[in-house]
Length: 142
Image (cartoon, rainbow, N blue to C red; front, top):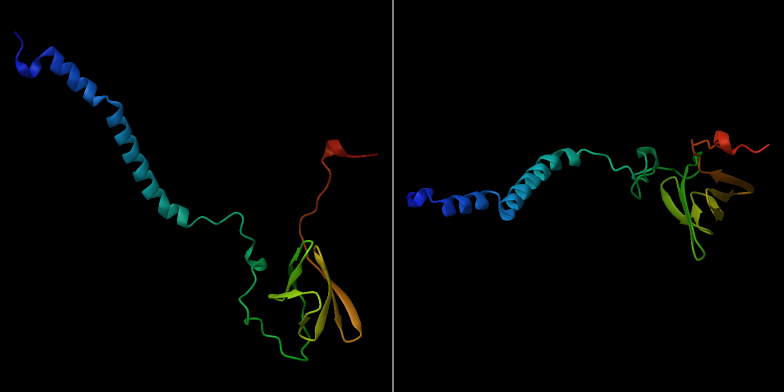
């Protein structure tokens, strides 16, 4: 007769315990937690692909130094338009139609374009995009 420690039923139960779904789940959770902890440091250094380039980031209010009467170089960074509201970001300042920035009045805001009046001069700013779109070779029209 087999000893109680080596009895066939006990051996089967021990084998079943070693390969139980609970044990497998516990091992999987442990490995997943270890991978997340190890990957957390690397993920902190990744750049957000939806974030605009640094040149397009609006500086905090009050950081754009422009003295009155000084020649201003105009930079249109963004326009936001919908049925009820039109806003633009010019030289880091959020403006609406009718508002003034330096000595210029914002006349109109359209998608990608703003019209300003400074004294008697009326001029437009446009957003520069470096993307040139061309039709795919198969989509050319003659």
